[in-house]
Length: 341
Image (cartoon, rainbow, N blue to C red; front, side):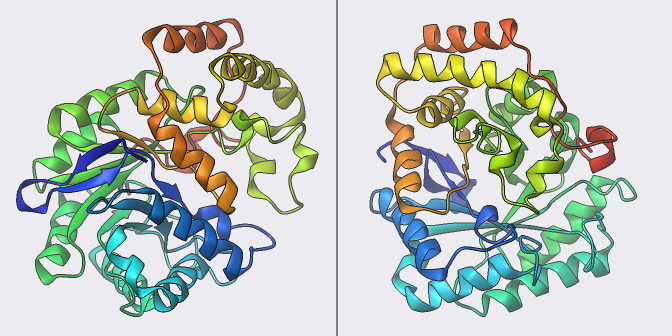
């Protein structure tokens, strides 16, 4: 991977690869993959960036089914076995939910509990670079939350503060309290509406990178799945609106069109989508999930795929002709999932 971006501010500025690596689906699945397979995928992404460049690894305190901290424990085992790789990684971890659920809880006590849990699970094998609340807890003004997190920065628990699933106005308010290094929102050819565009524009103005999660529509846009039945029983994606049978059939038209465009460019559908997201701005970093070495190589190579304005317009036309059907999450609408705080 040759393409890079800048992350951070002042003397805390680092160079990062233009494509990151999401780790959630290594452990937040009914049957987690083996350490050997996961380690090969992680090594592949870390090896893809040139010397002096960091690979953004995206994890979460709750990215596991049993135990909920399984992703962090996996990372600790990886860096324990491969300590030389720690300096190649920029580790971003989401937390800030209750200890026994995914309900946001930005009370000072719970934020401390969450951060300390992350550090304990990492066991000192890798420094926590960035911490972010997975959702904006509307019970607390964002200014109060950022003040608490900035205190942890002063204590040396981590160096950077991030945000996730937040509005552009919330980003601006938070950044006025303490510099925000990264904002994580869903961005892909089928998740590119006005709120997303507003966050992208605000972050570019403020010098904040955007970590674009689910840039492949949670695997849907890669063409890997032909029906929801291809997903393992217990896979949370079976509950998502866009993966419901009728919506799935409708949305396959988008996949088929993307496959056609990708074939003409001589790239895979996944690479086309990732390159499309990269082209939204120098500050936009897609963080596709990958558990296999081969898929990780494919994703990282997308950083250097050129996407023209004409390509962007072609994809835009596809979405105009085949509007995506179904919300980003499940029954009850996206609001039920505490999105866009």
